[in-house]
Amino acid sequence: MTNKYKKEVSVEILVGFFMLVAITALIYFTAVLSHEKLFSSNYRYEVVFPDVGGLHHGDNVVLRGMTIGRVGGVRLKDHKVLVDLVLTVPLELHKGYQIDVIDSSMLGGKNLRINEGNMSNPLIDKDEVILGNKPLNMIAELGEAVSGLKKMVGSITKGEGSLGKLMSNPDLYDNINKTAENLKIITAKINAGEGTLGRLMVDDQVYTDLSKISKNLSLLTDRLQKGEGSIGKLLTDDGQLYVDARKTLSNLQLVSANLAEGKGTLGKLMASDDTVYTDLAATLSSIRKITDSIDKGEGTLGKLVRDAKLYDETTLLVEDVRAAVDDLREASPITSFGSVIFGAF
Image (cartoon, rainbow, N blue to C red; front, side, top):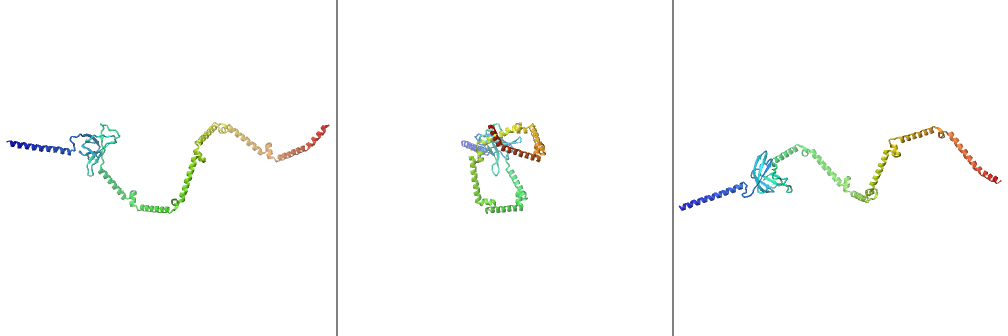
């Protein structure tokens, strides 16, 4: 009886041990398959996406290339996709952060990648909604690229565009070939020293002349900097020329102002008051009348100018006066001698 009881107890203990092992294994595999870490703190966050591109529950969350958690769940709400994150580390997001859904490998699968943003930027508010970016559909992008490449190849095949014409138009190829031949001929002539450009390339005299010109320009600039010559003085006169020019302009302004105000003879001639002009015009008119009368032989002066007889009589009168004067000069000594003699008695 006692041995039978002992056997029953041993069986129960063995069964209980196996049950304990089974339960422990079940808990362990459940934790591994669900990516849960027992006896560790978890940090939960919610990210709002317009589209998750195939992200699923259990996909990894990556920060700086390290897995820091997993996707706890994905659900739709108000035309948005809410993604629950279960992280092993607290998340500190700065202004300018980026959260993207990326491919985990070339064979498929998704990861959620977090970029915390620039550390110098301020942190986002605790109550602020965390937003994720719309993922790129690599297959769709690749399909569009292939479609565009197909269209481009088709247009080239049809001879459309520059590349298409190059591929299908022999004339264009011939023109390019001729242009290459012409360039070859031109370079050969340049190497042979033909033409202006060729002479520049092979003639040392041109280089010598250019060197002399450069030296002369250097000497000229040195002289200008030293203030030599007229231009040098203009450049180094410490503004005296500018001052003189200002004075000259000021004087010209004063003269123009006086002319505008009618001051001075020239100003009066230019003034709106035409008295001086009228007087001058009258004087010129009188002088013109006098010259006209003289030209017509009117008056004494006109007769002297126009009447030859009067001129001849005047000439004879002048000759008679000259003869009388000569006679008086000859008779003057005799008259003086008689006055001395008769004056003694």
